[in-house]
Image (cartoon, rainbow, N blue to C red):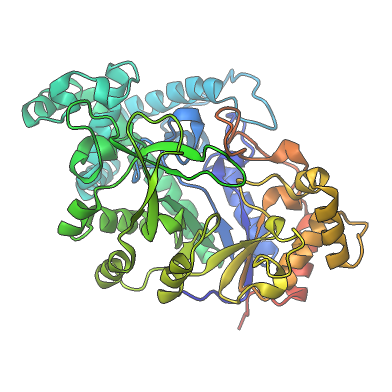
Length: 502
């Protein structure tokens, strides 16, 4: 796809202010969209929306298709009569700038179960009928997911491959037995997905009506401890006896890591997927595009070739490259779903073959200004080297904020940057970098909201390679001021990125 000359903001919904300790799909989400529209932005980029597992990472989800119940707004449940004033009273003091996930889960679980109980006994017949239709429409993944989450709770949140053998292998008789035994918990899990879908769809409609399109995110791999792997063992490289990943995903050693990165996700059985017309992937894209307008494929290079590490390894050193499904995969997607609105995350170790695959389907790639100033005039992140059909960022959710990045830069890179800019403005280096992104020829410029808010390293969303303490950053309720809106709008108009209105 080719974007119009435009701009947008990157922020995950968990980062919104909320009196419930975590950003959600309530009033602050709508205020953020109003801020986008008021500042002439046309895009909102988010991280994966799935229910988070290990480390609270959106990239380690229990499902590739389900929504995160922690994003459900108790405010919206209250408006529907599913929560009372009393239910929402006596909330604890939550941190203002971050998410205490343990505390949030405890409070939200209580509220969500109260809402489900009230829905089951008091909801109108029309409301109940909507729920029934939702469950029928999503049954292809919802039935497995709801049972998986019910089983996960029953087996003390242990990974599925450690469950009782018959249900770990999803044998039909065991599945039927547990569906009956856990029917109440399954109902609850389906209710959460029904409510998430309704709240998200309503919010997306509000955004689209105001000229805002949403860029979502598909991680190439899924978590081993997920409904997807448990219910579709045949399309993953698993040990037949133990259910563990027989072949694991990662990336090889490089300048930044002598041992590479061992992610631990199971590799796909691409031959089996190919034999089935890549049906699981087709359904994944279909479901994702019901929630978002554009899809960013995380680790796009893995479709051209991926790093495969055998079971038992503790680092990524002893892996090797394996040819991915490549062009054939994207041709099938195109045949079944039409021309897809895809952004290729093409960062890291990128070969000419990866770029050829990206360009064959005219997928815009990503350019990150934080990577541009190593002194090499051929650096393809430098603004004078980028192509128009790309998305240019100051930084991403995996980078430090621009202020934090600048503070930690080696002296020679800082000097390269300041020479490139020509001067250091009194507005701050973050606004210099915003101007640099907006003034570039890249069709779409995306800004992490932390850079707009003049935040240092305290605003970093994720620190790759650090297992704990990530994904919890939030902004305060009073920061999206009219002054900031107008300042961003002026830059957007100055550099020709405002929408053309008839």
